[in-house]
Image (cartoon, rainbow, N blue to C red; front, side, top):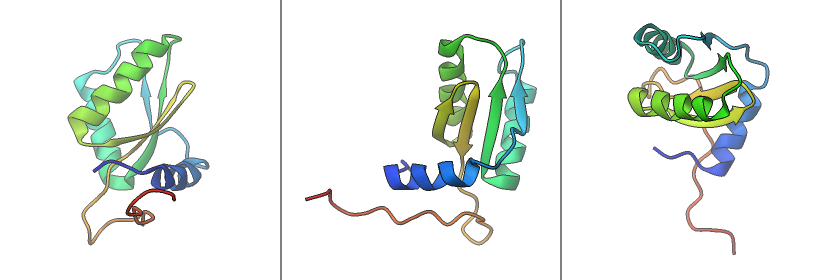
Amino acid sequence: MELTADQRRHLRGLAHHLNPVVMIGNNGLTDAVIREIAVNLDAHELIKIRVLGDDREARIQYLEQICAELSAQPVQHLGKLLIIYRQGDAERSRIDLPKAKKGGKA
Protein backbone atom coordinates (compact mmCIF):
# COMPACT_ATOMS: atom_id res chain seq x y z
CA MET A 1 0.00 0.00 0.00
CA GLU A 2 1.49 3.31 -1.09
CA LEU A 3 0.35 6.42 0.75
CA THR A 4 -0.97 9.37 -1.25
CA ALA A 5 0.09 12.95 -0.54
CA ASP A 6 -3.25 13.63 1.19
CA GLN A 7 -2.86 10.55 3.38
CA ARG A 8 0.71 11.55 4.33
CA ARG A 9 -0.48 15.06 5.20
CA HIS A 10 -3.25 13.61 7.37
CA LEU A 11 -0.80 11.28 9.16
CA ARG A 12 1.72 14.10 9.72
CA GLY A 13 -1.04 16.08 11.41
CA LEU A 14 -1.92 13.15 13.65
CA ALA A 15 1.75 12.55 14.49
CA HIS A 16 2.44 16.17 15.42
CA HIS A 17 1.60 15.72 19.09
CA LEU A 18 3.20 12.27 19.44
CA ASN A 19 6.39 11.68 21.37
CA PRO A 20 9.05 9.29 20.05
CA VAL A 21 8.41 5.76 21.35
CA VAL A 22 11.66 4.18 20.12
CA MET A 23 15.22 5.52 19.99
CA ILE A 24 17.90 4.19 17.68
CA GLY A 25 21.21 4.64 19.46
CA ASN A 26 24.87 4.18 18.66
CA ASN A 27 24.44 0.45 17.97
CA GLY A 28 22.18 1.21 15.04
CA LEU A 29 19.19 -0.81 13.94
CA THR A 30 19.54 -4.01 15.97
CA ASP A 31 17.09 -6.91 16.08
CA ALA A 32 15.86 -5.70 19.48
CA VAL A 33 15.13 -2.24 18.08
CA ILE A 34 13.26 -3.74 15.10
CA ARG A 35 11.16 -5.87 17.49
CA GLU A 36 10.36 -2.83 19.63
CA ILE A 37 9.31 -0.86 16.56
CA ALA A 38 7.08 -3.76 15.45
CA VAL A 39 5.42 -3.95 18.88
CA ASN A 40 4.73 -0.22 18.88
CA LEU A 41 3.38 -0.27 15.32
CA ASP A 42 1.01 -3.08 16.34
CA ALA A 43 -0.16 -1.04 19.32
CA HIS A 44 -0.36 2.44 17.76
CA GLU A 45 -0.14 2.15 13.93
CA LEU A 46 1.56 5.57 13.73
CA ILE A 47 4.81 6.15 15.62
CA LYS A 48 7.77 8.49 15.88
CA ILE A 49 11.31 7.17 16.15
CA ARG A 50 14.25 9.29 17.29
CA VAL A 51 17.64 8.53 15.75
CA LEU A 52 20.72 9.56 17.69
CA GLY A 53 23.72 10.66 15.66
CA ASP A 54 24.32 13.18 12.92
CA ASP A 55 24.60 10.92 9.87
CA ARG A 56 21.70 11.83 7.58
CA GLU A 57 22.42 8.98 5.17
CA ALA A 58 22.24 6.48 8.04
CA ARG A 59 18.83 7.87 9.06
CA ILE A 60 17.53 7.49 5.52
CA GLN A 61 18.86 3.93 5.40
CA TYR A 62 17.20 3.14 8.76
CA LEU A 63 13.86 4.46 7.48
CA GLU A 64 14.06 2.35 4.33
CA GLN A 65 15.14 -0.77 6.23
CA ILE A 66 12.40 -0.44 8.86
CA CYS A 67 9.71 0.03 6.22
CA ALA A 68 10.97 -2.90 4.15
CA GLU A 69 11.31 -5.34 7.07
CA LEU A 70 8.04 -4.41 8.80
CA SER A 71 5.81 -3.73 5.78
CA ALA A 72 5.34 -0.17 6.97
CA GLN A 73 5.04 3.14 5.11
CA PRO A 74 7.32 6.14 5.62
CA VAL A 75 5.35 9.26 6.48
CA GLN A 76 8.10 11.78 7.13
CA HIS A 77 11.81 12.11 7.85
CA LEU A 78 12.24 15.33 9.77
CA GLY A 79 15.70 15.95 11.18
CA LYS A 80 16.38 13.13 13.61
CA LEU A 81 12.75 12.01 13.74
CA LEU A 82 11.24 9.29 11.59
CA ILE A 83 7.46 8.98 11.35
CA ILE A 84 6.21 5.57 10.27
CA TYR A 85 2.74 4.14 9.66
CA ARG A 86 1.56 0.56 9.37
CA GLN A 87 -2.13 -0.10 8.97
CA GLY A 88 -3.58 -2.46 11.56
CA ASP A 89 -6.27 -5.07 11.09
CA ALA A 90 -9.40 -3.68 9.47
CA GLU A 91 -11.57 -4.29 12.55
CA ARG A 92 -8.96 -2.92 14.99
CA SER A 93 -7.63 -0.01 12.94
CA ARG A 94 -7.44 3.21 14.96
CA ILE A 95 -6.68 5.56 12.09
CA ASP A 96 -9.05 6.33 9.24
CA LEU A 97 -7.07 7.49 6.23
CA PRO A 98 -8.59 9.80 3.63
CA LYS A 99 -9.67 7.85 0.56
CA ALA A 100 -7.25 7.83 -2.35
CA LYS A 101 -8.61 9.95 -5.16
CA LYS A 102 -8.91 8.33 -8.55
CA GLY A 103 -7.31 10.16 -11.42
CA GLY A 104 -5.28 13.31 -11.11
CA LYS A 105 -6.00 16.99 -10.86
CA ALA A 106 -7.44 18.43 -14.06
